[in-house]
Every structure is written in C-alpha cells, then in structure tokens.
Image 1 (cartoon, rainbow, N blue to C red):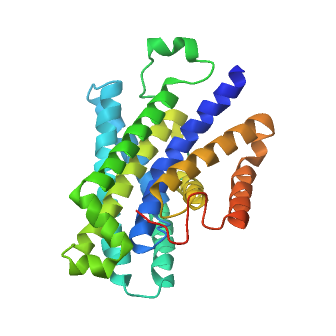
Image 2: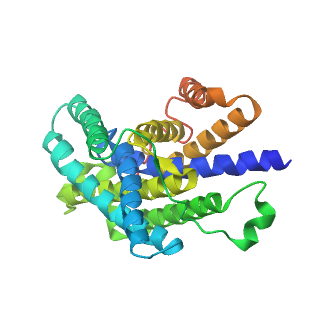
Image 3: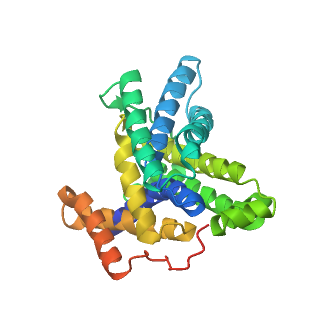
Length: 300
C-alpha cells in the first residue's frame, strides 16, 4: 500500500506543477483566445534566474530556506517582466491580425527564448542546489513523500486559492471576467482592456516562475529545454480540463499527473509521455471541449 501512496503523492506533485503552468495558458486563452507557446520558456527562465540568484546568495553567506525564498521572489519578479514584455512586443501589435499570426509569433518567441538561454548559459544540464530543508515531522512519511513534494503541493494550493479569490472577489478579477466574456463591451463600460491583458500575462508568468523554481529544487537539475516539455504537458492538462476554464486547468493537471505517475509506476516509465497524450486523445474523442469545458463556457 505504501507504493500506491508514493505514486499518489508523486502524481499530486506533478499535477501541482502542471497546474501552476497550465493556469497561465488557460488565463491567456480565456482573455484573448491565444495559445501562448512561449509560456513554458517563462517557466524555464524562472528556474535559471533562481539558480543564478541562489549562487550569488550562497557566496554572500545566506543558506537554506532564506535562499529559496529570496531566489523565488527574484525569479517571480524577473519572469513577470518577461511576461509583460512578451505581450507588449510579440502579441499586442498582432491584436487585430488573423488568429494564425499571434500563434506563429508565440512559437517564434518560444524558439527565441530557448536559444537565448542556450547561448547565454549552456546546453548541458546544470545542478540546482537542494534548498528545501529537512522537516523532522516528515520522517515517518519518507516512504511516500519528501519535503519537496509537501512544499510544492502547499505552495501550489495557496497560489490557486489566491488566484481564485483575485478573480472572484476583486475589481481586477471582475474586469478580467468582463474582458473574457466580451472585450468590446468591457471597453465600453470603462475597462482598460490593454492593462487587463498585460496583468493576465504578468500573473501567469509569476505562477510559471514559481513552478520552475519549485521543480528545479525538487529534481536538482535544469537546462534550457525544460520549459518546452513542461509547457507541452501543461498545455495538454489545460486542454484536458477544458482550456479557458481555471478549475478545468487544475483538474486536468491533477488527472495528467496521476495518469503519468500510476502509468509509469505500475506499467513502465518508458511510456510516460504515451500515457499522457493517449489520455488527451481519449478525452478529446469523447469530450472535445475537455472535462469541464462547455460550448458556452465561462472562460475566466
């Protein structure tokens, strides 16, 4: 039974990371119906920023959890600036272009950011320091989950609760929902649509960076390509749950995480990606809008 719970919490950890990235995909799609393929690279940039900051702080004498907190904070802020800039230069000028144009721009930005980090850093995997401290109360549970699993699940849960409260109970959230439902009507009632779209990219980038730092600290290594794979998986999770739906993105991420974990644990780790994409194909055949998607869905 311990093995089952190990796979369960492993899948929950994967799902939490996918959810942090998938929320960015689904929020942007909900607002402007764009699939931001460069979103995975923001996740990768967040991890690299944290690695650099952690190295500097270590040389300055910082240690343990203080490095993790400060490195995460800098990575989130830095990635938010990337998300804001990306929207400004790559998507806003194409706001009224045919839908294929911003999609191609997104793919181009994804490739550009990958190669930018490749040239600025290295093509090799870099070791990421283990910044998460040991918790004494976790000792009885080491056979099923580690400290990093617990931290990832808790941070992801808090981030999702705060995001839900932001969207449901704040003026900004109401403006985001109004923009998602009808952009022109939102403009007519005084909503600054450009600011809302930029804010959506900024929030999505912050969540992705948080995911990047946590998974890098959990796995212990990063390279310039981690954003592509994680981004594709998170996009799959968003589609699985019903892209444009925030609860759908979270549910799709958890389902994907558990599918990969149990599939690799009980069958073979060689087919990890096969399990994920087979599930997506099945869902799209029998429920094309995703698990929680509807033809008249409320997107954000």
